[in-house]
Length: 160
Image (cartoon, rainbow, N blue to C red; front, side, top):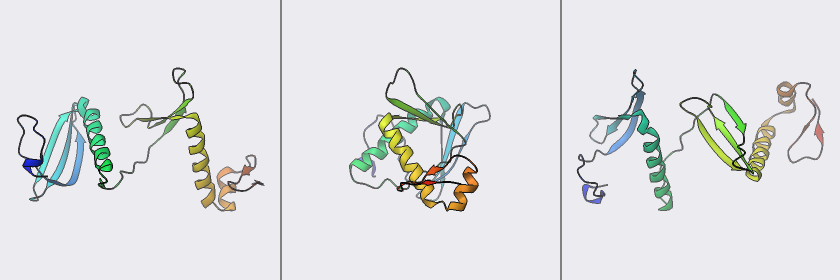
C-alpha cells in the first residue's frame, strides 16, 4: 500500500509496512496492551493502546480480513488456538440456539452462538472425525466400560 492508496483519516503518521508480528504483551498494571512488529527496513515498531480498545482493534482487523476475502485476496494463515476449557449452554432470550464458550470467564473468552440444527450438525461432524481416526483399542481405552458407542457411518454398536 502506498501513501497515495491510504484512506484520508486526518492527521496520521507515515505508514510503516509491517512484515512480521514479533510479540505482544499486557502491562504489569493491566491497563495497556503492546504489540511489536518488524517493518520492511528490519527495524521494530511498537504499538500500544489501552486494554479497553483491544476488542475494537480485533473487530477492525476481522473486518479487514473479511474485506480481503470478499476481494478474493488471501489474508494469510489462520491463527490456531487451543482453549483451556469450554462450556455449552443456552439463553432463554435466544430460543433455538446454543452457545459454545471457549476459555470461559477468562480474558481469552470467546462465545459462538449456533442455531440448534447447526450445533447438532457440528456435533455429528466432530464425532465422525474423532471416532473415524480412533482404533477399536483407542475407543476402549478412552471410553472404558461406558455403554456402546455408535460408530459414525455404521449401523452397528461398537461395544468396549
